[in-house]
Image 1 (cartoon, rainbow, N blue to C red):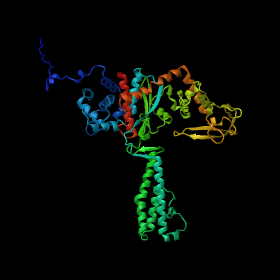
Image 2: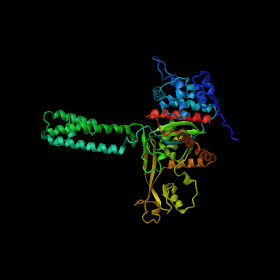
Image 3: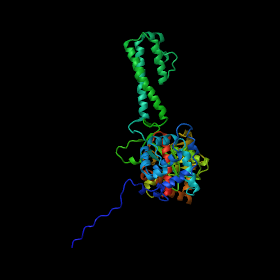
Image 4: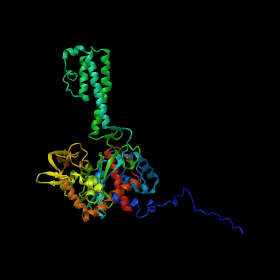
Length: 520
């Protein structure tokens, strides 16, 4: 017997019936939802510094507290562009509830994020950290620091490289000198009057420098002096100098100012420096990309400090990062990249716990059985035996390395260090020379006794019971936070240009991470 076909039943669906809508968005948002957490956290902040960004008069503005809530929640939900945020304010009930159904357009949102927040994001972030401290989530004791490269909002194909700039500047200076020699050859009258003097000094008071300003003064003076006496060839040379060579030289000098000691910068974001990205490792053609070096300090996987830097090297970023902090932790814990003499001295000066690894920490704390590895460690300069009475080092073959001189070195941060130089007097007949050095002459070493002392102290701290616990914790602290931001929050590239605006955006990312962590 065939079973009769059932008639499908549907739930009532009636459009344009206001009675079917909830009386308020409050009813649709469950207790403990992330949007409620963001609302409560921002409401509790003292935002006088943000309110001070507004001047009286003119038309009314959207309340900065509402705008900040919307931005933080948008970053929590992985919405980073102002147009997408403006769209969510009209379509998403969480954003509607948070904004009180106000709908600022994308220009207003972008202006608030890029201009209003630019100078106050650090204070807002510090206020959020204070909340975490008050609630007991953070104690500000152990500070775990690490860095990562985040790609800038810049065109990777439009980059100024220091080496190329130097080469182009040298070429244009050579061309200018060549053109000035043409002028000299074309004006025998002036040659007879001024003899063998350089043309740079013929301009009437020229300094002899080859800067764009000095050369422009020289060309102008020659132009005035030779007016009415110039041949067609001379006029063409002057035109080449004024319209081509000098503008190019001015451009290269401007590029040097922007570089300011860096190796490169992006034309579309001059604050960004080209760096090698971790995600590009192993690629066949992985060119450096315009990026910022982001330094992050965490505790309990909450972000408690951050900073952005032009330099790709992590060691020189530690001191500027700590100088930016609004609070002082008890212990600093990092990986081996930060173990420099300058950083150790800074921790000692500020009485911070020294838990900074150094590059050879692993080799110094592990026993090896392989003879090749043992041999390599035996010939490290800091493993040589030291005789303080004669101020000499003794190599594995019992040869002595005598003192030569002491050199002084200065880092990019201005820290001065001393390195003592030693050299052996008889390596030619040594049977171990091929294992000890590749130099044709005798073995030479550089030693910083202060660095050796700092490393010994760091090694004792890191191998203690507390240090071992901190080393284990460090492996799941900062890396986990970076993984959450890059993978879960999908933030791998800045959306604002310039160091200050990128710093604002990263501050919002860190606040959003902390909110997501609280809600989890």
